[in-house]
Length: 195
Image (cartoon, rainbow, N blue to C red; front, side):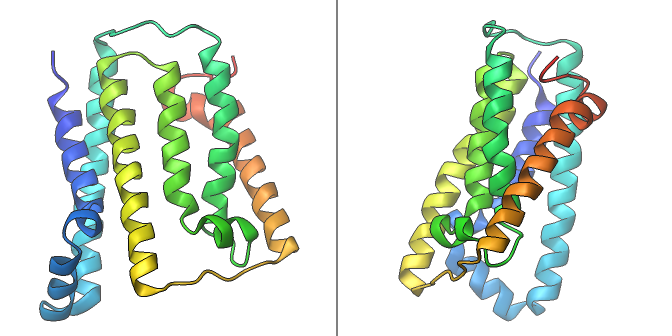
C-alpha cells in the first residue's frame, strides 16, 4: 500500500521549506505586503509542524507494513552510523557562532541534511525510506544550490575563524552523535544503529 500520509507530510513540509528555492520573489513580496515577518513565521511554523507530524505518523504507519524494494547489506548500518558523525558536526556548525566550518561551507545545516539522507538511503530499502530520505536528499541538493546562488547575488560573506568555536562545534557534534547513536535513536525510532 502506498504511504499516502507520509507523502502528504513530505509535500507539506518540504513544500514550505522549498519556497526560497522556487518562489523567492513571491516570498519577498508576501513578507513585505501581508503583515510582515512575524505573521509569515507563524504560518511557516504551523505548516512545518503539521507537515512534520504527518511525516512522523505516515512513516510509523508505513513501518507497520513495509514494502521492501531491496535488502541493503547489514554492514551498511555501520557505514550509515559513521556518516552520521560528520552530519552531526555539520548540524552543530550551523548553530555555534564563529566556527570555521560555517565560514567555509556557508550552509552546514543543509549539507548535514544531505549526509543524513544519503546515509539512511544506504542502510534502508523500503518504499517509505526511499520516499522519506530520497525526498530530503533531493530537497537538500536544490536548497543548497539556491542558497549559494542567493549568497552570490547578494554578495553575502561569512565570517568566523575562531579555533575555540570550531573545537566547540566538533565536541558538540560528537557528543550529539554519541547520544543519538547509542541511546536516542533506539528510544525514538526503535532501531539501534550500532547494535
